[in-house]
Figure (cartoon, rainbow, N blue to C red):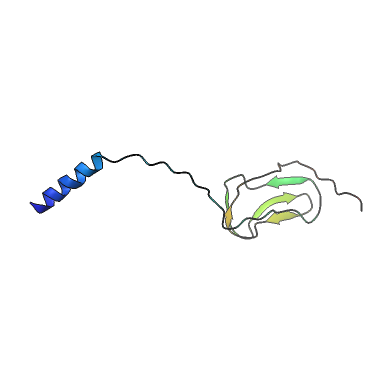
Length: 91
């Protein structure tokens, strides 16, 4: 009988429940701005925004080199597309 009364009390208490709204900020534990060691034309990109990556996984390839993930994580932004070309400035 006690269990039934407790159950009824809990059921009635949920009828008075109110909606709760909250705002919050999500911050990444790790982030990195990656770049190729030299300029060139982007040959292929293997990831997109929100892609999950593992350390040393190839992310993109230039016609003459590639770039790999420095650690496991999720891609949160991408500023290049396949075929984009980058011209190295003369020094």
